[in-house]
Image (cartoon, rainbow, N blue to C red; front, side, top):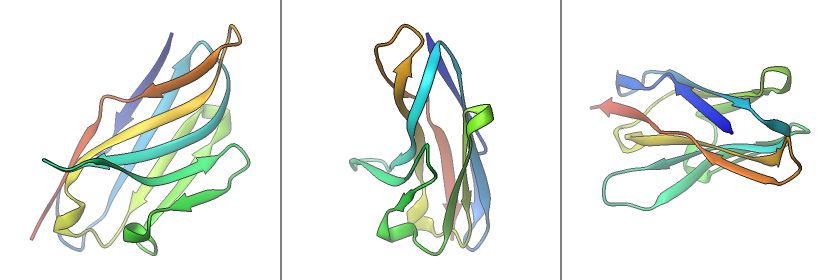
Length: 120
């Protein structure tokens, strides 16, 4: 089994910063892509950013220039530094990991979500 532990959400004023982290553990052989998604109430879940094992990062247009993603492959951990937060960034943020399990099968796991609330 594979577990994702997310942390770093909370309440912040507009213009503030938060840093999310997501650590994967368990029966993992390799991780290809680690990603953050978000879902606001009544809306679909959207990709925020993803990062490959080689370090290539893709950002959604709505966070470019404000959010920075990084990854520690040795720790199977991904981070999302969120700066210049806006009220419209309020959502539950979910970590997603895609890779291969220790027994060779494909692997995709979602975290439980961490709430980010940005007040105006």
